[in-house]
Length: 177
Image (cartoon, rainbow, N blue to C red; front, side, top):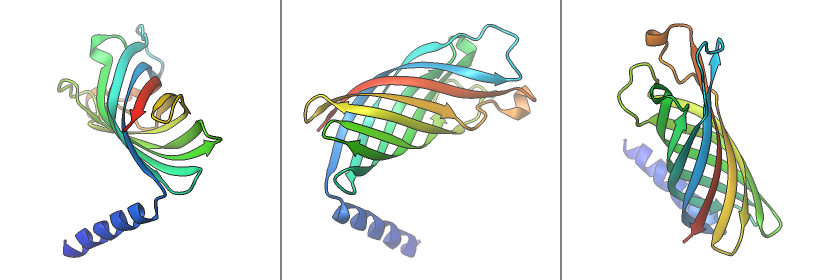
């Protein structure tokens, strides 16, 4: 346990000391999400409009490369009440700057369910996330992202062979503090 703590402390100090810039901020956005079923759903499956909000840390590695970590609440899933899926999410992205204003990023995302205790849903899911950001000023930005679920969000013990992946388009804005 002691060696684990020392290793984590070393990694944290090394990361911060080699970073050219560390920025923090808050972000909010609009979600348009839906569930992709396999086999195809025999019922009407409409998209859900939701929201997301959270905070982030962006560690500069070089002038044009950074590591981005965020914790956000996100309302996703489908429109039907039984298919709504709300999460606490942690996207981790490698980000690449193009010029002074544009940044593109890609990486994994872990999601922990927060909605009502529905046994039909898995507690932890894994997705990929990619997006682009445009800096309006030195502090204000707008962005667009897509989350694509790699893991089945449905509990196989409850629903059998039915599988569903969550896909979300997210349009946001934020401020670097």
